[in-house]
Image (cartoon, rainbow, N blue to C red; front, side, top):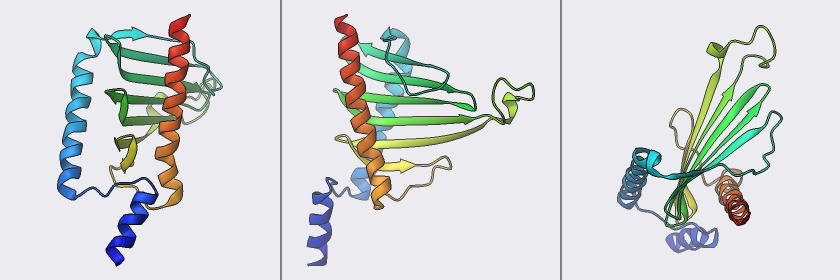
Length: 175
C-alpha cells in the first residue's frame, strides 16, 4: 500500500521512479552525449540570434546546430556584479542537460578595486530524462533535494524557458 502511494505520487507529479542502476545508465548516456557535443562543437553551424535577455549589461545567445538539429544553446548574461553562463544541451530536440555558472565579482566591474581573481563561481548541473529533472548537482556536486516543491519547480522552469528560447530561435530564423 505504501509503495503504491509513493509510485502514484511520483506519477502525479510527473516523475518516473528511476532505479539506481538505470539512473547510472542514464547519467552515462548523458555524459557521453555531452562529450560528443563538446568534441564536435567546431563542426556545428553557429547562430547568434538577437534575443532579448533580462540583464543590466547585455548578453549573448549562441545556438549550435548539427545540420538542422539543435545541439546546444549557450547564454551569457553580463551584469555589473557578475555574469552568468548557461549551456543547454539537446538530443533529438529534447533537453537532457543544463550547466549553469554564476560568476560573482568582488565589487562592480567599473570600480577601480575590481579584481577578477576575487571572482567566485557557483555551478549547478541539471540532468533531465524526457525533459523532467531527475538530478541536480550543486556547486559542490552534492545532490539537491528534488522532493522539495521549490526545487522541483526549477526543472519545470528550465524546460519552460527552453521552450520560449526555441520559439524565439524559430522566429529569428524566419527573418
